[in-house]
Length: 160
Image 1 (cartoon, rainbow, N blue to C red):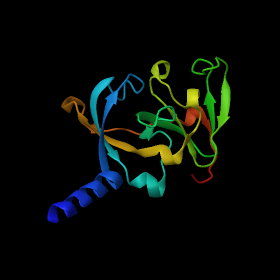
Image 2 (image 1 turned 135 degrees about the vertical axis):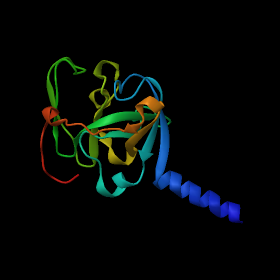
Image 3 (image 1 turned 135 degrees about the horizontal axis):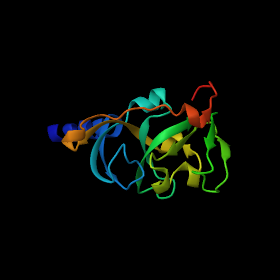
């Protein structure tokens, strides 16, 4: 029965603590390589304190619930996200308001990313966690940085 307890503890640790994810695809270049980066995902803190603009997150894909996507948080509830004509799916500049309980996610490599510009705001329950560290390749070992996205939004200081 001790092994069953261990399995239970490991399950809880994985479900609510820390997870690992690998990258596939070019949407987050240069932050993450197209294939092979090993990321440490914090599955805990976003459940209590939310996410911040500029953080890299893992989310369940809105297009296919079997897939997970790695994207950067551009906007949170109440923000008005500016999408330049260059990066707009409709080819005209747009301003989109992020509804309550949602986030706006985009890849760092805009031309190679299917993200909120294509499928709209992402509901908070689809967030798996915040990417904290890159473990592989060893030459790129270290924290995954939060960057400023202030140039992309009209700020609303309401709570997430």
